[in-house]
Image 1 (cartoon, rainbow, N blue to C red):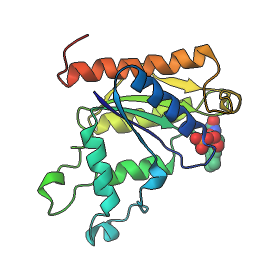
Image 2 (image 1 turned 90 degrees about the vertical axis):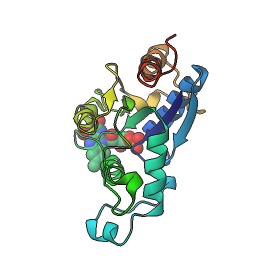
Image 3 (image 1 turned 30 degrees about the horizontal axis):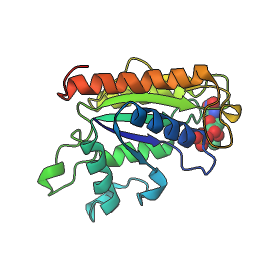
Image 4 (image 1 turned 180 degrees about the vertical axis):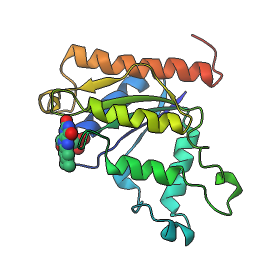
Length: 196
Ligand code: FNR
């Protein structure tokens, strides 16, 4: 089972990037082949249909292929103003836009359909970015993703990681692992691997 993990932040000290690294390690420990995607490494501008008409950027095609190739995803969502970030929205908007003239990508839903997605969030606030999840979930459902019923919001993120970026609290570890394991469980069933 291939799992793609990414965070909706490019900030150097991002809590959600740290959370993504932890989730990726847990997925690997559970036997998954894991790709940790850093959105900062993709050269993707703010979506503009005029720009797109001149040709879909190469890194958007790279993104679409990465999404398509991984049946399981874990998204770590920061919260800005009670919702998810513009970076996440822009990434998803580009990935869902059909590529004119390319028979592989004329269906905008294709990279999303049937993907099993787990949503995590981290914030130093008391709700742990939970409100971002409530906006991100319907967006993904609209694109025909299958959402894991479990999710985890990491509150008090500023004191949740040690210097190595490891989650120190057993309750946080167990909350994140619960989502990761549920995503892998469901992805195996939906994507044809033998039931465990
Ligand atoms: C925030 N932040 C924030 N936090 C929160 O819990 N609820 C919120 O509504 C907001 N709103 C908000 C708006 C804007 C414009 C900014 C810049 C920040 C704080 C934010 O969640 C915090 O900076 C996180 O650390 C961002 O995630 P990363 O970069 O650490 O992953």
